[in-house]
Length: 289
Image 1 (cartoon, one colour):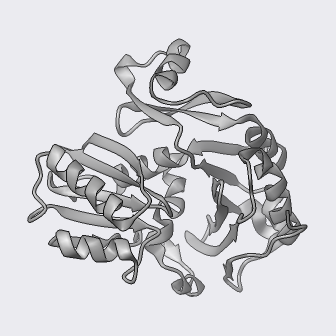
Image 2 (cartoon, rainbow, N blue to C red):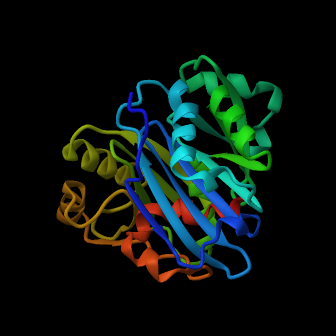
Image 3 (cartoon, rainbow, N blue to C red):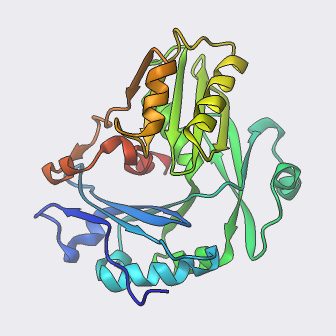
């Protein structure tokens, strides 16, 4: 394992001050392959920083706390006190339950029904207030302990909770029953579908090839009684126009577009260097408070 890591990319507005972090909000996306965080100036209503790290040699999620420490060594202000902190943990081990059917005492049964047992983890849940649902998932104990050690006021959420809630808030009354949101990761993707302004479908798929990807997407479109000829796909996450998966979408889907930044927030000019659709969920985590 490398003794230190360096940012994959780093963009900070010249107005950023380490001494002012108590006036900022910190949002973090953490998974077994890396970390991205944003800095939001609450008073200015503007994002003023984003930084990314890749964990190419990480062998186990139990190593994540030590990698958080490596980020701290590189960026001391990472663990400074912030007005608010959101940590979006991303893994495959979650399941959605309609809120009227949810019982906290049965959370282990819900998760055990379709997810394998995860050692050294606890079962936690997020209430999706805008979607009348509860997201139950495994969260590694070591990640929880390290996060609370760094930031006592941290808000821990599953990445999919922030994804669903932010889309629900930002697109209420703006999409029709033919709109699908597709969130791409390196080797997986999520599909979110709203019908009559309510969450109708959510699922995550692993894939190894571009053919796998388009197969799962098309079969889901069919199962939802939609048509590739008139469905509208809104893309977010790790995809761009030179991506093989984008070429497959272009071949099979007539109407698609990349998601636009949330205009309710301001963004420093320095952030023009990044593709906003790749970090849409992270930029909108503030709405999940």
